[in-house]
Image (cartoon, rainbow, N blue to C red; front, side):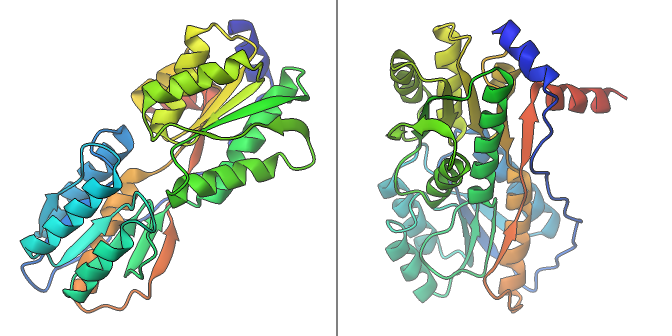
Length: 316
């Protein structure tokens, strides 16, 4: 694997997308507002970062914010969380929908109760005041381009590619896969049938290991859990000739990249989503028309070189 990483580092690959920078904005609530924030789960570092940013922004703005995220990704648990938020009488719900369809009925009931809806990361099929998310199709396409370039740098121009996705109902995951698959159009690589892990790293590792037994040359994980499983499978099986790319950012994923078991990951900006989600909810409650605008919160490609560069910058 170290030999492979040397080849990849010599390729000097540059990030295909860059993070978006947002200026701080002061928001003053016109009332004693109560907000609820509901992410897909409360475990993944991605969601922890989003929730932390939302709480800090709510505190700075002087509004009440209650975290009501379920412990794991489950449609029924998220619907229950929305229903609890309605029963609590919150003024706005900031939510990352686990499934764009499953949650829609509960969100429509919330809207009927006069509650404002703001999406962060992943929308549902219900109109909202605003959405703050990654352009997941474009980010998935970039992940595909990164894998293709890394494989070619290692002298590999054909072979099977395995995809470990979350499920087939979460819009963000679907878009990340679509963009990834589009990147391989016209190449000699063959994308195998997608396997689903529900975001569970252990399950993702088992799936990835099954792909390895099929002789894949590359693997792609579409979220933090899937990517962790991909990296761990490559590590556990000492699959030095297989290149893995992932999605999301966590200490574990950064470690897998630094150790050479993942080539790169698409790092989102969940802190930006959380901060702007709270600001948008307050604006909507103040009577401001946001028009359902969708804001791309950006993504960065983190390779071992990018991680090292960031560390050097922080040390200066």
